[in-house]
Amino acid sequence: MSVEKFIREMPKVELDIRLEGALQEDRILVIAEQNEVEDKLKHFNQWVKLLREPDYNRIHELIQVISKWLQQPDDLTHVVYELGVSLAKQNVRYAEVTINPVIFTENGFTFESLLTALNDGRDRAQRAWGVRMAWIMAVPRDNPRSSDEIARWVTTAAARKAGIVGIGLVGKEDAQPVGQFERAFKTAEKKGIARFPSVGEKLGADGVASVIEHLSPSRIVGGWGIVENPDLLSSLHESKLPVNISMGGALRLGLVDSYSEYPLRELYDEGVMLTLTSDMPSLYRTSITDEYLAAVEQLGLSLEELEEIALNAVLASELSADEKESMLAEFKEAYANLKAELLTDETPQ
Image (cartoon, rainbow, N blue to C red):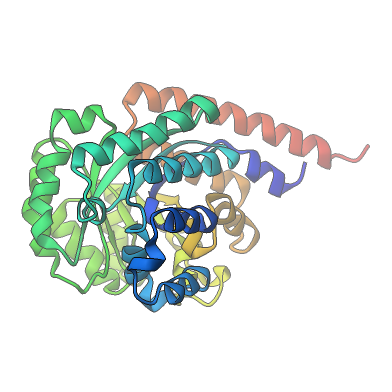
């Protein structure tokens, strides 16, 4: 067994994967044709070109446009199912998927019909492939007026029953000051709902520190720049606040020129509780498997260190304590068996 095969066969948890950034090109173009988007959308062919060759300076705009091609419940059901298939093929057992509901409510969905469509796809994927998915409903930074409504919705008993496990924050970091979202996130915190803001892409360590101060996050998504702030590093080490990193995202956004430049080793050695995510796999041209491979092959982590990061994702998830305990035991056993097979294959005969 090769190291690559070991990583591909590892059972995994993926957190904070963006549905709008995981749309498969073939499917979204079929949906666009079915919904006659080309007849309604000016410069349709230019958007298709951007989908195929993304301009990462316009990534948030691209997400807004192509996601609105999903206009029928079946559209959402299909893309969720296909995401589940993709995750299952990478041996992801559980995923927390982030969605910007405003995109879809502006397209005529109610919160209830949105969840029904999402859960139809989720349930089909679980029955067919065994992968479980839960939902994080994200506030878009360019629409702070939606934050209170989303917070009220995600804190309802119906939302929790339907698989919503948290509230997120997505979009251009400089669109609005983070304080605009404090009330909504405090509402979620008071109701026991987890908080998962994305931060760091534009504002770096200062943005991360501000998010921690104002939003009391349960997990940081992104976190670019924290390695440059010793006080923040120390705080994250002491608090064990999980930081979920997409190295592929950092590469595509121009924050690094190669995977090998990402400061993963420094963050790990400083004791930050790290997890890895593909974030927006279709747009960033990556996968959770690719991220794991890069950690070992390009950044020099050992398999034992990678296993620790993989298990961090279980610990940082919103699974119940009993589910975490069971999954940790299952994963550790699987890793031990894979490692034994790897060592056997490497032993000279």
